[in-house]
Length: 455
Ligand code: PMP
Image (cartoon, rainbow, N blue to C red):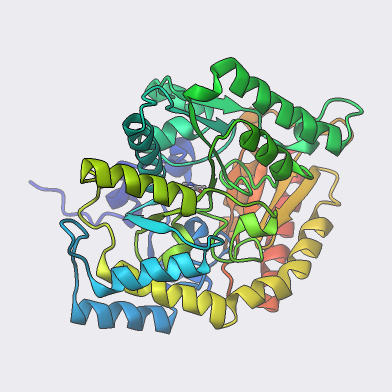
């Protein structure tokens, strides 16, 4: 006879879902958290427990979980034209309007946009654009992509190859044409006595040597996140992007900014490249683009790449690439509204206004003897746990220190993310002062409990 015992939500999820990016031993012990809805920056689970989501979902729900304007924009577009593609010269009016808007708000004078469903697909699309362009221009071997160790660019085959994480070895990745240089994390990676300026120069020299070793004629692009996100919120060392841009210019190698997290206000300006004062040749966007209300990504090509790709495509008469839902009208209508909400309805201003409070909170918690460093930019922040502050010695990995802190936070009704031995905070742009205080109070409580238990 069939077992009619009602199953818990955790059992139903575990039995029916194949989990990705989930620490299985921890979920087996603690159970999955199944959510039903959100209220501002809070999410609510099936038992009615509320959590302040200090991660904005996965960095993306910048306007919170119930923004009426975004819901209305989605509903109106669903009623008007609920789906279309962008093949064969047919596309929705919303798709054209969003392309124009993205060029208008980009740092580029002119450009062209190509839509995808995700950040990974946008990175894969960029790679295919470069390969297509270079092959048609008689440079079929100009295919290598340089990225950094610890970078995160996604999970599709090219994007995963760009990602500088050790777990990609489990898939036999990266593919051969993907090359990684060092991560510019001064606090962790500097040599003894090395100044930040010297460190930055060493990073730029390493890139220069890598380009010379591989041969500039074999390199299609360098791709970097203005602030490394899933690498543990790592802002660049001082002057890094200026030094890197100089090397790339010398070798005439395109510089692509992966702004999937940093785009649309996260670092306090519309773009991370604005915050760090460099001009890329193209921008990869996703996440905040729709405030997380629709899966969408975009490649925004600056003038030079846009012109070259257009010329080459004119010769071949077609760029044979696209996704069924590229430029989906509902996604585009939501993105148009999201850009307006973030830029014109005070969300970007709120990030600017509350960044000092955010940084003070991080700095205060970093006074703890087991926090080695706080780092961040705008509404992206991290605290790195250490066993010994003076020597920067990490905790034994078996202690899973950051996972324990994050789990204790969850118990206290706060969602934050463990990454390496760091705890990452990436609050929604709508967060108020009192919600920010609640976030730091809960995190402090969790830090004290966990460090007391393990030290
Ligand atoms: N690039 C960066 C910088 C990201 O942070 C992410 C996602 N975290 C991606 C690309 C991949 O985006 P998606 O998960 O939408 O494929």
